[in-house]
Length: 424
Image (cartoon, rainbow, N blue to C red; front, side, top):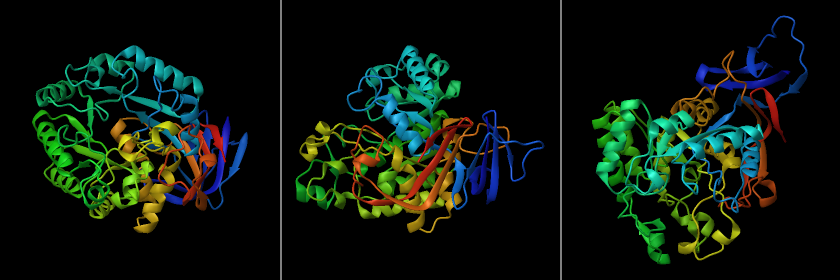
């Protein structure tokens, strides 16, 4: 299949490309940019005049809810949501049921995803057996089965010695370790940021120190072991400052932020809006400002959706009893564009945070439009606004704090390996 995407503004942050040009695709790969190859004859031509032609988005955290939570979402529904949002590669955390701690489970998930012929799925394996924090998993076997990194997801790992041993093992064999920093004791039972809003509403609180204490441990052990550490879902200003200092000192550490935390703060909880019950919790306005600034200056390497579809029964409960999480695969691009517009961040810089940079953290050949490389492409209209409504979302989860709001960036076409998988 030969496809020509004609006259779009081609933006490829990895290779420094930002110009109006045509993109030529054949046999699933990018074969030319600008001038057509000799003897070129396209089977299909897509007119991208006035649109952005970018690499397919790469999402570092998208829960697909299989296996075990099919009543919340199915692989089919979430893969539909992914390509509708321009996401062509995604990593799924290990907190399924059962957790992704055995090669057979990983192979089954990858086989199911491949059979759907949509976005590429990269499982993140469990760091400890059953995510219980006691015994280290067989990382080598899980890596052979397809795991790109190892994580506890949101499950606590209380025993620091186990964490040290896991990092030592991972460092020895070149595996990546992804950790969300939250002290298991300081964060226990909490559902909201420890501030004025939580006090007024009488909600159990999680102090910022729950993140910084855990982050200090992660950074110290990463420095000692030399492991490739990635910090997931940073949420505090103090955490951003710690990462900035660690990078300045030469520590090989990366981090991401959830798209929601760039726009929302604890005030948005209002009167117990369960849609704003997230993990980590929405922090204060100062924290939100620090996250936005850290993303702009490169301290924070990537934006992820932290896609967590929840059924209605899980959200229609009192705030503290509701299930945390928000659907976001289809909002990753709009929320990133909204941040870039508001903070006057150049579009190529913003797109790098959701393409080339997360791809680098996954260690995959994605997030760029290099010649001879897989043609995973997202064509979108940055000036088209759309309203976030349940009927507009393909994800089975309709749970998002942004319901009713208009957001920029409508995906027109998504290609995976040179095949059109979505047109909107």
